[in-house]
Image (cartoon, rainbow, N blue to C red; front, side):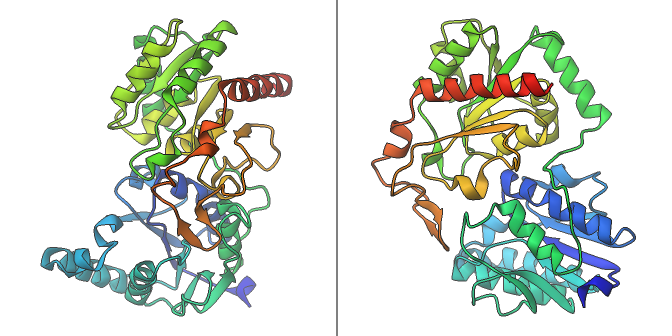
Length: 372
């Protein structure tokens, strides 16, 4: 049935962080290939909107700060309720043929929020993941839990309900000449040249679930070991992570660089694309580096590597470093949120040794050098 659909206007809802939005890019590409003449609108958060603006994958970006509405108290405030009413009117006015929801339904507030948005869009076709709670969908893929397949694969399965497929999916973020020019200027300002072999080290995780952070001492030790191999450590500081990044720079007993104050996510991706390697935690910046084409070594502890590891079906461009414990992952496990704030005894990260990360980095460097 879906193979013969003719859709003129499609709404895609992905109200989440950087890494989550990037996992949806292959699904958006599938929709664009299948419905080349359709108007595709993305409903995203302010944090991620810049990743899609100007992209050929979407025609319109609508922003909703969904974090303001994650509790009933947020919704009931008069100003926020009015904002939701205006958004609902805007969605309804656009007369979408299909609404694509790229979210798991793991909490009842989430079910209510996304149910409201689907009702506001009033599209005849409403597709997404279902575990029995998303009754507002009329076409759905069964949610088998976090990590049953990678998040990229879940969203590809969802858009396949509309006859859209992507035979060779890859998470890649195209960059424009303005971002490339700014990155070249920043690179030169850091005293780096085109031939310099730089390893980007990102010790943060963003604001969501800092329990995913490996130790600063571990990152310093990795930077020092890779400096002995001829790489230049460049420690990346996201907003609010400047103190943490400076701590790691100070701990590396070799010349190293601090990257901070990058104006946008796309500019950061352009800067990262010049690096030979990226080493970091499970974070949006890790996914951004992978989307910029950088080989990635990712340290995972409480979070689910099968769901949110760097998307790399061949295993040629990434390595995951983790300790296999019965309790790990404890964040986004099965069909529940799990322990967002950790367990108080993070053995899953404490048992990750710098030598393990260095070995993974050297192995990946050899792999990518051999491939060219």
